[in-house]
Image (cartoon, rainbow, N blue to C red):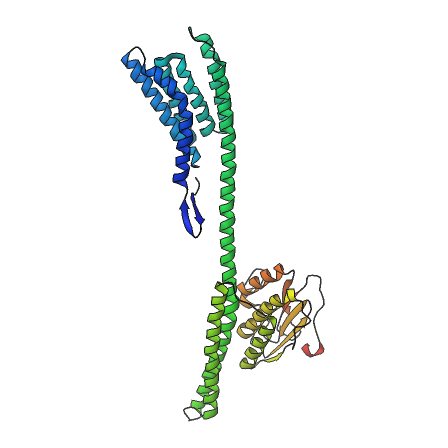
Length: 398
């Protein structure tokens, strides 16, 4: 069974009716072979013979059309159904032969075609050979009949043509299924990319929002504990922090919209500025590089994502008080002095959406992601070229 619904220009197109119509047209071309047997059966000497002969022609035409259209629309018959249909066609040919004589053997051409359409290939070849043998033998053993080698050749050619058509149709069907699988895989990958971007973009921004909200709450609470509803300096600072919270929320929303439209851009310089602001707000001492000029253009976006992920992880998981970020032309390393916990529960490669998404981006740029103990006592997150084993360390990170 195949799916006849395919996307086309943003809508679903049902191809089954069109295929069925084409199958009917092709079946009608084959049924032309039954015109002479029908005429001879209708002119039989007795009424019962005429009735049986015409019924045989009509039954053969109907069974052949059903099998042909069914196969053309990509629906396969079970072995039992195929066997019953073929036997019924043989019976119909027998009725036509009783009414029209040797002319009724023309129906075996359609039987040969049906066999090649419905039966498994090996069984079809055997059955088609039996049909051809009957066309060769019957005219030579039945008194009054004459050998018709032209009909034998027609049956052979019809069988071979149908077999070739069947194999071509099956190849096209497999290709269609493969295309559907590729399309489904592309959709799944796009969904995964969107989910990953949602985590990377909103996770960072909303974490900073949470930190700023907590700081604002502490400031207001400290003012109340001093007996004053809100001392002016604390109130002013809280108001400023809440203003930044609103700005960050709006930025997160804009990021999400830009991501959905494919217009979201991450820059290393922008992420450095955002990280500096986030660490300052959280009260974390941060040693950050001041310029990104030495980093090749092809690595800057990946390093920007790495810095964003590292900043989010420090704020969310580490409980760190100090962070050091080192940048070289082919590596970015984030060290902290926190608990040393691998973020998102990623105790092994493949765990944690943030690191997994970062690993995917790094792999696409020819880089690798490594996590491990930091010289500061916490966690190290490194994104670097595979052949760069240099440990980015200085005395002030020890």
